[in-house]
Length: 169
Image (cartoon, rainbow, N blue to C red):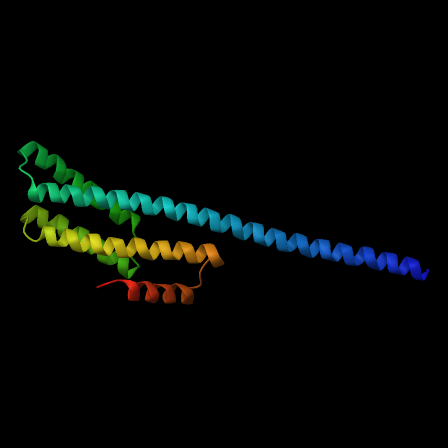
């Protein structure tokens, strides 16, 4: 084999290796981008669903507290509060401390509405604050995952700490 042939085959081999490496890198980046876009899109939809349920729950409890409702209207709104509260709880993660705080507030409001209306207004305000904290955390997590893909447990803990520090308690 001639030197020219060796150089030509070497060039072809290097080009092939570079092409394969480029293909592998492109595949990994594409897979990561699809994952990030899918997760981000799903979380944004989830945030909107939870926000809508929370808004409906809070406005209905406020109607009961402030409203001069006839018995039929009141029963309908109480039923809606129960259903909406349950829908919120089903959307949340009972393994997360922030989610649990929101779940506990919803359950407390629901039980107080069944007994007496006192204290529900303050609980509604606390629910609004905790829900805002929860949605803020999820938004920050979406932004972090969009930058770096799936977050490690350590990264999530640091994010929780950062968000908790930024929340006015």
